[in-house]
Length: 224
Image (cartoon, rainbow, N blue to C red; front, side):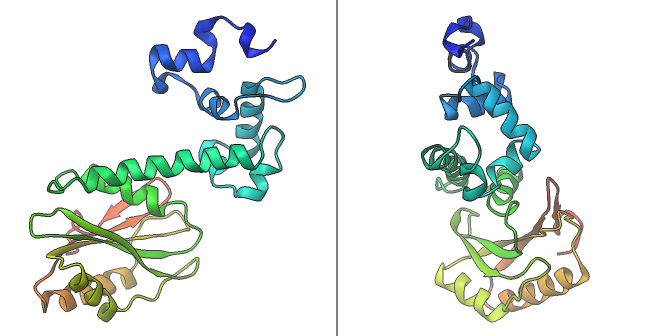
């Protein structure tokens, strides 16, 4: 039975309008982007099969263009819609950090860093540069490495911080392995960066390690 023949309260779009997006399942949300199904299957049927094949919404959305476009019911147009939705979400999180207000919510900061770094397939070292009122000046991915490590150069970090006229900085990097536990090398690097930046009176507020669903804060662990 096509979705148009379903009761209004069960159709994904009408359900969203009546009850809000949070009331929808992953399959129902995905079906709204798919819009149409394939022969003998509704958009929700196709969405459920895609989610089952990839193991959930997140692995589906990070599967890559070739894998997604090869699936029944998907193509370049729908892939573009899904990627645009992801980027809208990231930018929405970014705006919560860049509205000219002091950075007071550690949760907003973590959610933003997680959205930017968690799904990368290589290690990336990044920084949030802040002014003296802890307002965000810029976010930069400074160095990119391999699956297991990244070369970080304190001199270049200092140059970028000075270019932004930063008064403070929050560092972040991801562990593609999914384990957020800081390594001894992470601790040594953070100390070197802290010492280098202190010479130009720039404070390191935190260093956050992003894993798969978990995050570790140097500040909370007393490592700064």
